[in-house]
Length: 148
Image (cartoon, rainbow, N blue to C red; front, side, top):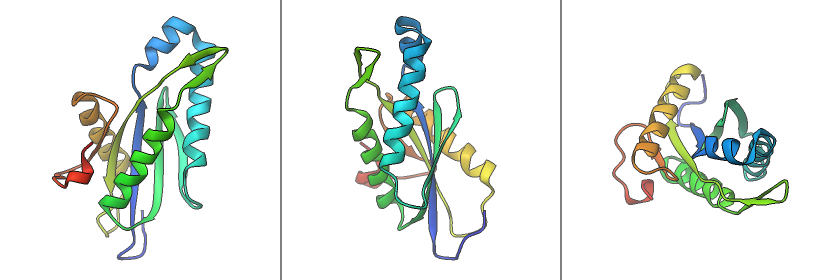
């Protein structure tokens, strides 16, 4: 990926926690509806120019264009998590879902899309390993606003 020097972007890799439980207990139509509603909620809270896409299964990727840095990116991740914490109505059933998010920030140089996505996915796996329903940044992040 090429972008203007000094202009950062971020890739968020989102995974729905315990999605298999929804599919197994309520059926795949409810699971499909949950994924659709999650996608709409994410899209509704992005800025113009940001992009969301389904990577596969219960995973989504978000490209945040022109971010000021880690703090702004973490705030975006927290807003997405807050929006998804509101219950979903799935064919008459009230369901709560949480997501784990991995974040990869651009370094100000040329990045390759597969590498950024891989780094964000790696950070997401760390978020899941640390208890789910949280976000983590790829690499060392010790600032208090980066960890929930």
